Amino acid sequence: MSGNTNTDILLAGAVAAFTVDLLVYPLDTLKTRIQSPDYARLYTNTATQRANPALFRGLYQGIGSVIIATLPSSGAFFTTYERTKTLFTTLNPRTSSSPHGLIPLPMLHAGASSVAELVSCAILTPAEVIKQNAQMVSSGSSTNATLQTLAKFKSNPLALWRGYTALAGRNLPFTALQFPMFERLKVAIRGYRDRRGLTTGTILESGSITAFSAGSAGAIAAVITTPVDVVKTRIMLSAVGDATAEASAAPNTAKKGSEGLVDALGKSVESSKATVKSAANSLNPLLSAEEKGKKSGWKIGREIVKEKGFRGLWRGGALRGVWTMIGSGLYLGVYESGRIYLASRRGEHVDEADLF
Image 1: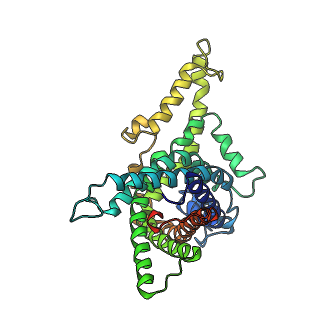
Image 2 (image 1 turned 60 degrees about the vertical axis):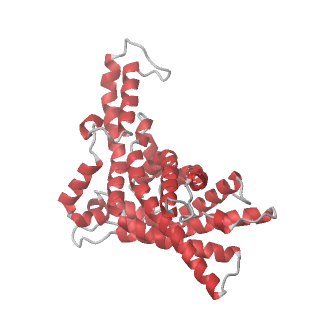
Image 3 (image 1 turned 180 degrees about the vertical axis):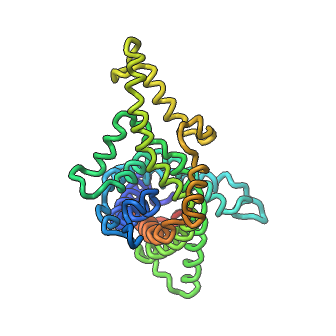
């Protein structure tokens, strides 16, 4: 990858993530509250069924945890994506009739983005669980929303990873849809400008083309994957309840094993084993809901349809499309511009073929 180092990719990804978090976080908070099962009870007027002022309060609740986790997760995503895409492209067999390889580039891009998303989700999941639960805390509370949420997971921190499969289940189809569309749209716009003699080769031009392409592709992918996002929101919001339920059951287990072995934290060995086993089960999508001790994504989806109809699965879709268009456009636009800028400061050049 000419002109760019791993440090460039990490820095550009971190700056892009930080910029987007600050600008579009309020829209994400609104989307979480709208998709919450408690939306009608907490954020609507009983008499008029319209949104009340509480819906728009504390829109930045939980942002601290996201900023902390987004920086390393975005760096991990882009580094993995760039290297995996290069590897797939190198391994793609070429023939005289297929100079670019037998496997179409959109499929390579989708595969690379999926691998990168799995890595990123492992880092981001705890922050997402904290964030979404903090977004639902009453803004009138005197205690910080993030600290309130963290306190609920104190007895069982491994529960923070319970939303991994839900997050990956949403992000994998999203990125698999977005990146091929984004790459194709960007090439088409650049080709159009080249044919018209409009190309300037500036950082602003490159960033603008990337932002428009990424925003348009992201909005389409976001609307299509909204049902998965609604289910993911419900699962992550229920993580607090699961952690609290286990905490209340823990004293009984500890009492039974009080005369036995204890671990480094003073908990009984059996209690510790149960906690680890519970967390491991939650990361395995192949186990049944009964084995996990909680509702499966499929069952939650059926409950939403029964409760709200099929329209319930698309709740927050328009808002998600808008904030994803803004977020993805800024995210990838700033990322690409950052890579070009960092390389140019060293007097190096980044080829167009090396950008995404």
